[in-house]
Image (cartoon, rainbow, N blue to C red):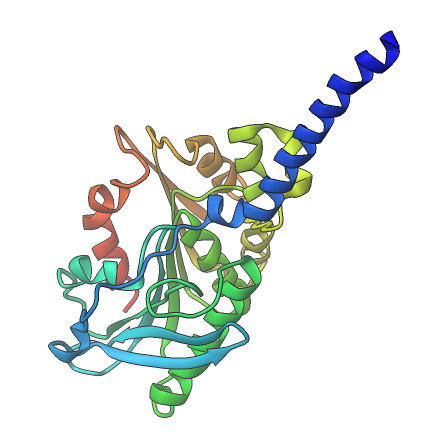
Length: 275
């Protein structure tokens, strides 16, 4: 009887642990992604030169946004990816400050974000980005074959590296990047949860593949010293893959979300470099 009394509490704890693990496995999507929608009636393309790109993926209807240069003579297209709570059109406030003739911007929303249907994952983000590139080529690329570049912040750094892995780019900017989502899980919760991870973003491998190209794209990695979300050590580790080919900047007294404003003067230079 004593043995039975001892087994019952253990069985309850095992059931509780199993329930917690099951919840983490089923609902980790909500822990990783924080999709938002645009306000009702928000249509900035009606009062600006912004162009809509609509296309289909297995997740359903997707929408990206293209901001051409004023002279419509495109020399380079920057593909921009925001963080996990960001939207493509959040970039517009900053992009109005850019005065670089010949530079265009392709702004990507992830599936389930903004006006896009579906659900975000490494695979669906990659598929949507590929289709956005094809939609741009079909709509605007018949007479224009510009150089391509990409910039991403946080989760967007992983999406930017996916784009760079799939397409030829001559410049890459990664802001507050993590080494991998598995490393983030270890950092936040411990390694015991890593086997449950179903969204294995990995930034080392695609960055290494890009570094093996000839010529190697210009690569800038920037990280705030007080990043409270992604440890600055992760930016350092990625930059250490090739210290000769990767420019690394640590921005003093800068957190995860203010790195864009702190680094914006440099990013404006980056947009116009090499034209």
